Image 1 (cartoon, rainbow, N blue to C red):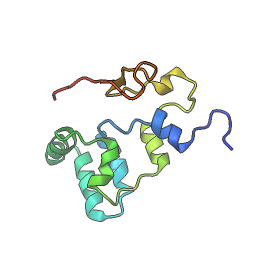
Image 2 (cartoon, rainbow, N blue to C red):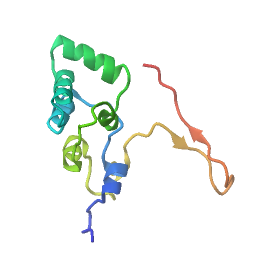
Image 3 (cartoon, helix red, strand yellow):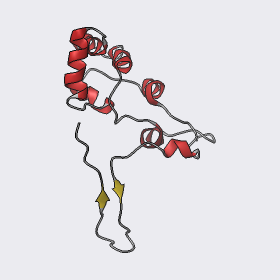
Length: 130
């Protein structure tokens, strides 16, 4: 049973962890430490480095292709971060009742009511060009 104020994994991933934004270089270095394949770990360390090549690759791959934190394991399959590591990197608030816990920006908003149109969902979003 959860104690008062404790989060489930689902709640943490839904309300308190921002895994959709771009990983910072410091976070890529942390992820390299939980990557079992040496080539993948070294590639993450290179992306995290402040060298000209590391910066160029970071800009091309992470920024240019908008690779978010949750997509890193798709590119580096042996990268297996623990929930504790993700919490250390991105955790916001352990108290769901706190207003700030739900203030993670969304890229869309549902703008319809099931009372008016029970079989239709309308979504509002903005297109941002980088």
